[in-house]
Image 1 (cartoon, rainbow, N blue to C red):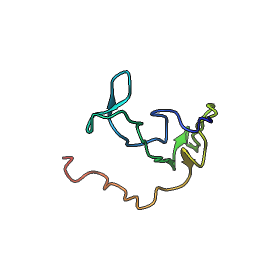
Image 2: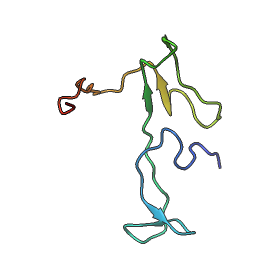
Image 3: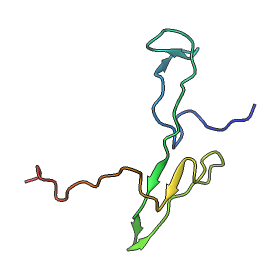
Length: 88
């Protein structure tokens, strides 16, 4: 069996809430796998010392293009209003 994702790693999003030594679904009470979804981390316009910089990983199971991406805006992203209208 080949490990593709690790439990709760970067890029893994929402899933079933589990508890106990035998992973048990908190809703159904039945043994279960967490069923986490792949939710890529998007990073863009990050700077360090006024230069654009990228994120990366030295872990072999965290892969660019699958778990995270550089300089790609998340689809359907809407920027916040700055300054925030409620911040007075």
